[in-house]
Amino acid sequence: MASIRENQFLFLFYVLFLLQSLPPMAATHSHSAYSGPVIPTTPLVSFLERVQETALQTYGKSNFDPKEYVDLSLKSNISITRDAFDKLPRTANGSVPVDDLESFIGKYFNGAGDDLVYSEPVDFVPEPHEFLPKVENPEVRAWALEIHALWKNLSRKVSSSVHDHPDFHTLLPLSKPVMVPGSRFREVYYWDSYWVIRGVLASKMYETAKAVVTNLIFLLDTYGHVLNGARAYYTNRSQPPLLSAMVYEIFNRTSDVEFVRKSLPPLIKEYRFWNSEIHELIIRDAELNDHSLNRYYAMWNKPRPESSTIDQELASRFMNVSEKQQFYRELASAAESGWDFSTRWMRNSSDITTLATTTILPVDLNIFILRMELDISFLAKTIGENTVSDDFLRASQKRQKAFSSIFWNENMAQWLDYWLNDSQEPQTWKAENQNKKVFASNFVPLWIDVFNSDIHLVEKVTKNLQTSGLLCAAGIATSLTNSGQQWDFPNGWAPLQHMIVEGLSRSASIDARRVAEKIAERWVRTNYVAYKKKGVMHEKYNVEKCGDYGGGGEYISQTGFGWSNGVVLAFLEKFGWPKNKTIDCN
Image 1 (tube, rainbow, N blue to C red):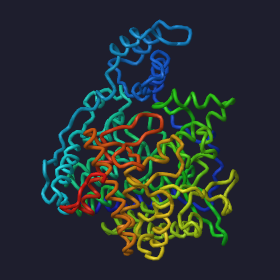
Image 2: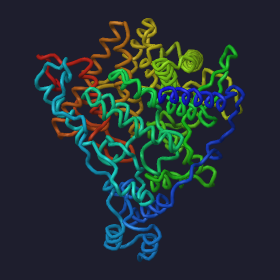
Image 3: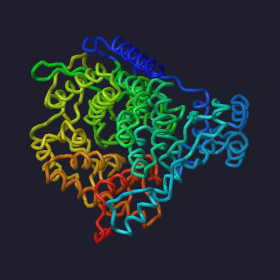
Image 4: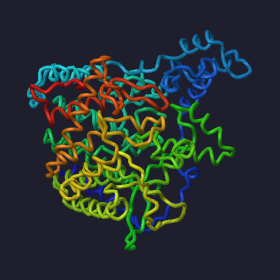
């Protein structure tokens, strides 16, 4: 009976999805970046932003991390804490004597990260059965086991204080254990979690992988979308939507049909979110066919709380409120993309205040949504929901056509982001609106089987990748522009290496598979050498130099590190490492 009721619920949920989604082609979207929706923040977040600003005025910019202050948790009632804060002695510029501020923070707050406690993963064993069977080199195997052991270092659970007094914390009350990225990133992050899952699956930690998804589904059910991260200040934006891909990968390893059955309704809910009015736009191609495609669009037009002091300083260049609000939404939308920040989103590559994220249809976002359509179709068919499966398959076929008409550039043999005009829909496609600059994201469509299964297409794109300038001594560069932003040259990031390599390696093309293995080998080497230097895994790497970690952006390079660990393990699982092949940079 329970199974029947669940099926009925799924069917009703899907009917509701259809009713609420129609009519998609009739919609017109006139949201400007500053007049769109805003999700209110909490009183605690607003107060902690004031503490953050005072701390900057007191301590100065040197080694100042604004996120530290919005991650603090209260020891007692916010009104008592606010009253004590307002009574602190202040100078004319708003600073507080250092001793007084430190005394106040120590008396009224618990430290950033204190509301997460260590949690031993239930399925961790020091050396799992059949762990990385293709890794024959003893030195590489020993290192891989050290990377595997890092899952213990990154495993946490939300403390009981968060569940008992949620209004004292910006951390959200997740019920299952979590895997954090590491360092200043003390909480769960959305798109990081996909590569964490790929790593823990290589480590045979299936219950840990399911717990990650369960937590993300809780956020989706509670807030209507999967949050950027599990903090109260992240409720106004999401991140690249990879939840369906996580469910697919877990099912692929475990064949857990019940897990799929429970996950499918939330996946459909997330699909609706990404195809809602603020994210979906209609483009008319050269043959007058209309295509529904998607953009990043944060529901926020104020400084990001975790970077409030930085955002306010940048926005000081704007004279009126509406310009500031537009800029703040562009900043938050770039953060929603995961690429915070990059010249990819800027009209002027030397000026971050020219961010225009909401006016761009990104190649990779639309690939993620195409993958969501394909995943939902597959998962629905797995549990016998054939109508749902067929509908999502049709949606994926429509989006595939859009990739040919809107994103593909035959001369460059790449898929290019599309810049929107400031006009009502449907907008008419113009060749000059494609962004002709080279980014690693231009090659992300290779990740999807509908593209990597076309051998002629793959060989054309692979040849272009090899001459694009992105392939470097230690991996794939994010862009060709050295802007000082972290999602630009010379930084390389684990997710981009993995998606492109996995796509090439799944092709029937011998050349593509050879290029994939070479990139993976370079990436594993640079991770290994950097690890041996410092004893840590890094968030990003400098692909110009083997063994060098990355830099740039608004915070110092972080260590830990969830997705870097996951991609190394995924690459070693896929390609192995021969016994006699050395692992150093030479």
